[in-house]
Length: 157
Image (cartoon, helix red, strand yellow):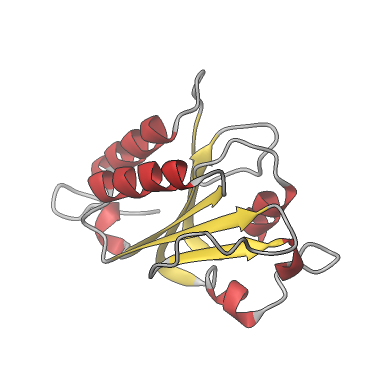
């Protein structure tokens, strides 16, 4: 059982958040990045992992620190991540949170969620996604609402 109190909140046990989503476009990325900085600024590191639903990563994607792209060739025929670099993004880390901001049924996102060894997995409650440690049911799933609820719960626990 996790012991928490006013001075010992669960959020203090984590130092990084990895955001997982399917790449849509640059404006969606900028929106997520800004929301992440707004709601999770107290974490030492914010990483963004995007799944690209193609065999090649397009050249026009933003190339900045702490943003990683996985494409279909990063996965083996059984759905496991092939490269050590890709696996290291989700290594066993007791100080890391995986936050999936997708409600989609992308098979690669599902595989990552199932394989990830982050201490805490958070996302939308959905029949098409695996179970999370902390899941939020929303009639209109929006990334902003997910981030708000996550921040609230992490600070209350």
